[in-house]
Amino acid sequence: MSDYARITDRRPAAERTGRQSGAKEGAGFDDVLRSQEDKGARDKTQDAGAGQDTDCRKQLQEHMEEMIDRIRHGTIQPKIRIGAQEYTQEEWKKLLEKFDGAEETLREQIAEEIEKRREQAEKEKIAAEAAEEEELRAGKEKAVDSLP
Image (cartoon, rainbow, N blue to C red; front, side, top):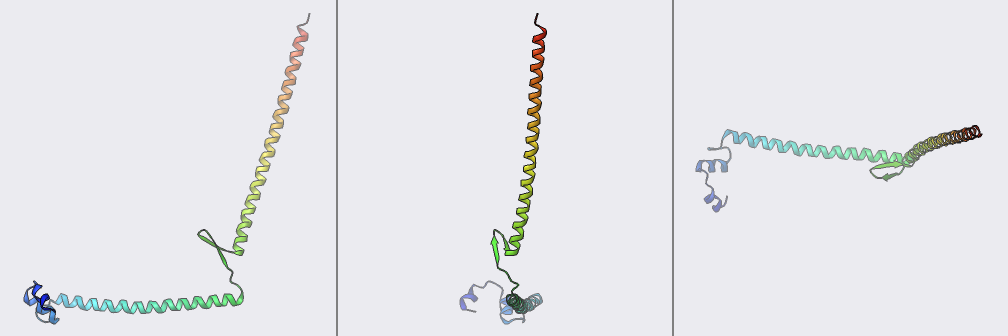
């Protein structure tokens, strides 16, 4: 410790000497326990980090071997990213077939609805013409009856 640090250290002398010399006078039992626990925790995290690195390397190696097998056997397909999703060529074809099927069904339903409306309009037109003819006949009969 530098002379300036000793001068500016405002702790009591017993505390300063105890901490400087380790677990001798002035250092509390709690301080010693805490320092030992901290040291053990640091050692555990360092060991866990080393084990984690080997686990990651092992997983990466396994994945690389799996990819090499897929490439050799020709079972791997390129994926095309569309938005947030990726599709292989086969998946893309299936998706398009589903979409095309749904679109075709919708077109058929719309065509049926249009045909129903046409038939309904024809029926209404025929009914309106029949009603008009009936009115004309009724009007002619009234006109004939009103003749002297």
